[in-house]
Length: 178
Image (cartoon, rainbow, N blue to C red):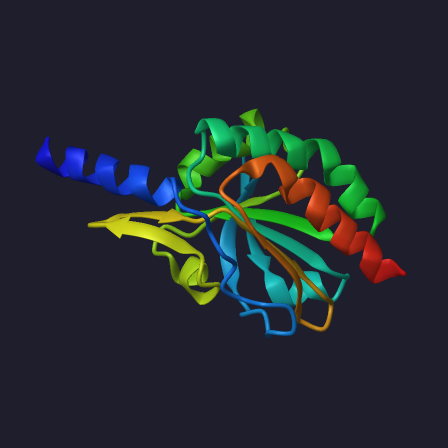
């Protein structure tokens, strides 16, 4: 019980503060391979392979099935076709396990884009987007990146409010085409 109260206090103070993207435009995007769920099916996502097809929008979210993350997933799902039309690959990532993300992919992402599991925070730490870790529980910050096909960060947006992530990253992807 004491641990739960401490975690609640930490999360409350962390979510009340603004977030900042750690990687900046021009930085090399760390390469990664991760398990993903798409439409309830599991596969492997390799950033290097996706970049061969065009830019990648990688967005980190704190926890599947929470209010903000569910709203954000719905917005990304609604815009998934627009990302594809602009030549970009869309992928979400959290510290949730793959079983949780199978359900999240189906229910909240509408099977429109893959969501990656990073329970060990390997990729989350590489993108410096870890928000908090208490014991074996890790949570990612809400950060969205647009990565050029050359493997460079071209846009980074960090805000714990999910409202502008889709609008901003889609605009950055479209600007790459010009």
